[in-house]
Length: 295
Ligand SMILES: NC(=O)c1ccc[n+]([C@@H]2O[C@H](COP(=O)([O-])OP(=O)(O)OC[C@H]3O[C@@H](n4cnc5c(N)ncnc54)[C@H](O)[C@@H]3O)[C@@H](O)[C@H]2O)c1
Ligand SMILES: Nc1ncnc2c1ncn2[C@@H]1O[C@H](COP(=O)(O)OP(=O)(O)OP(=O)(O)O)[C@@H](O)[C@H]1O
View (tube, rainbow, N blue to C red):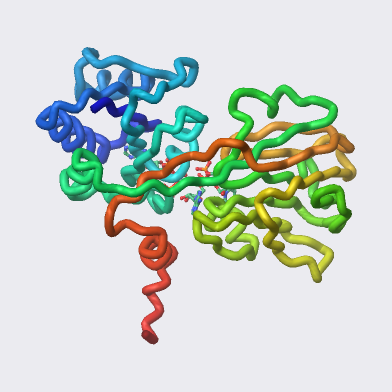
């Protein structure tokens, strides 16, 4: 069994996590291949020797890997998705971060969870992604990483004035949002930025997207759930010449009046769900639903 290991940061808490993972996998004869910058960090801290094979953003992973283990928070999982891309390699997140909504494995008792990996006792949760085409073409977005697991957002840039986002669904006019921005969220992203702007939570396997305005001054505008095979066209205008577009954590500038077409990609990201660590449990525990003392 061959497993890719990825992390973005080294903190004090990294050491016990790495020690647990490495000793467990060594005992179980699992081959580990480590992302090159992360290996550099671990080597600098004298945690591991440089005897491991490495991979990087530019050396795409092939399907000989059983999975990629991401050590960090949700931001690290979003970066991990840009490493696996359309390879079909599933991602397992060990939560070394704060919320870790997508990184479901707690960093305590890692051995118990990794035993599920060895036993192949897990399920796959497939996550819909969004990508963009821009007319005229925009190389800053339309590149190898043209996909978002959480959301695509358009928002104002260099100004406090609102932008106007003319929005069409399958070429039918929907609305001109006058707002700070507009979020097109996947089910995965529905618990991220969209939620903060009043959007609904979707379970990961729902075949829908959510259009959520950011602070709209059309006061009646509400988040809208649409089928995920909808083609969404946006044309943004405003006082500045440019606005911002983001795909998860990545951001670029786009000229006003460009036409953006947003649609789902033809591949999905596979997230590993370990027995007992379900989406519903994560909802209760990480969005603190269980903290209401009335019941
Ligand atoms: N006001 C907001 O809520 C807001 C604003 C900007 C971005 N975001 C989210 O942050 C993501 C980018 O992450 P980052 O690490 O670069 O930014 P960041 O460092 O600002 O972290 C954003 C927070 O959002 C949480 N988060 C990310 N994806 C989530 C998801 N699918 N479900 C639940 N929580 C989630 C993370 O745990 C983290 O605590 C974006 O895709 C967007 O969803 C949220
Ligand atoms: N490999 C790691 N080892 C130890 N701590 C880490 C590691 N990766 C991330 N962290 C901790 O988690 C923090 C957040 O990480 P990351 O950017 O991946 O997540 P995030 O998007 O901020 O989401 P979350 O709220 O889940 O932390 C880091 O600042 C760091 O404190």
